[in-house]
Length: 316
Ligand SMILES: [Mn+2]
Image (tube, rainbow, N blue to C red):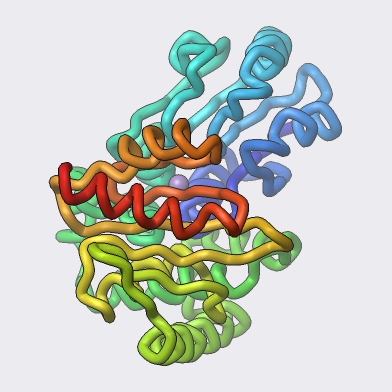
């Protein structure tokens, strides 16, 4: 008996479809970093075979996951494939089982390369969909894979998959259906429900852009928008593009908290580093990657946060 545990976004779904195509038969379960440990414990019996794709190891659960991997890999096959930063408390590559980890490629690329020998070459398009969906198409492997296809075809299909899934966040049965469909080498656009969801998502994207055009505010080098009608990660990018600032922030207020996403397109700005410094100073949560990061704080700290962030960019 095979289990596939996957993240529910375009990269996770593509990775799951590649794994399912390679093993032929398995149960697909969608999970996420903070739920992985419980989901494994609740579903898997030692002796089952487990493939985990595109799910980071949560710092809090790292030790327990280590122990569970030890049991699972002793009794059955355990394959863990991921590309997120590793937790501080354990070395990912020292986890028991077959561990494929790299931050330089998306999970779909890593999964395809792991199963490549078992699959016809056309399945490389699933790796391409996942890479485009995770903004990680600029690797040697994916560039070469794209060159084997007509780019117009491949970008259209990748867009349908990524956008269609974006519009179906917690619909796990539907996503399982998408995984099965893709594992049979069928096109995302051949699934009418996915295609329609992608179309709705595109219209919503335009509504989001129009809203930001009307409501974006600026503070020094920063463009920001609060409570946009749509994803804050995208809104952060549009805020900076529309206001022509190096940094974009989009925040969602929840009670007296603001949860925010930050984006920059400048190579000389390291949002992760700056946010970690500010987070310490203000005693808030903040960090991520150089160009894409997140933060969470009490709403009454927001103005101070903006001023510290702006000051940090000036001296950056
Ligand atoms: Mn991913």
